[in-house]
Length: 178
Picture 1: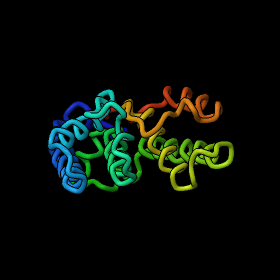
Picture 2 (picture 1 turned 180 degrees about the vertical axis):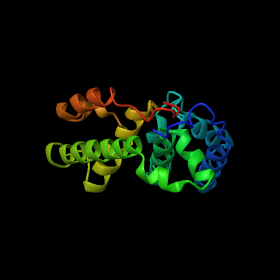
Picture 3 (picture 1 turned 90 degrees about the vertical axis):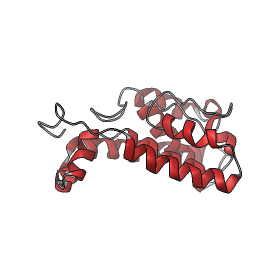
Picture 4 (picture 1 turned 60 degrees about the vertical axis):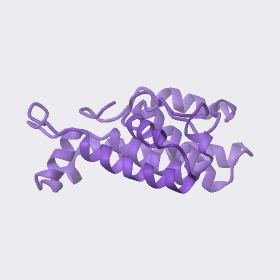
């Protein structure tokens, strides 16, 4: 963690919200969807329990673009907000050397690789890109507590269920919205 910043960081979510809302506005403009979707999804990517504006969560949009945008903002929601403060005050080197962020990123990448390989070789549900996308989406959703889904992961091989259960113990970074 970034020592000494936790007690005095007063950074709010306004930048995160603004960028997220604009990204989701592009999505909604592209797909002619209601404006409520952009606000609801943006707020939910900040690890609030996956309250989607659709019954089928993010998977209901049936769009890899929407899934990738959501992946980015769920990941960012799991990062320690003190690191954002460091970026704002010009101490970007601290961000690059932060052990917690490295562990978080390594865990996301490692679990994504394992789940994607399982989906590629032990399941006939997805092609390679879809296996990686759905694996990455689920890993970040579970680790950050966002709660979004893209498909029914209960139909995946049992090995993925074991990994998902173990991932619940990791979570996002200290000082994030997790």
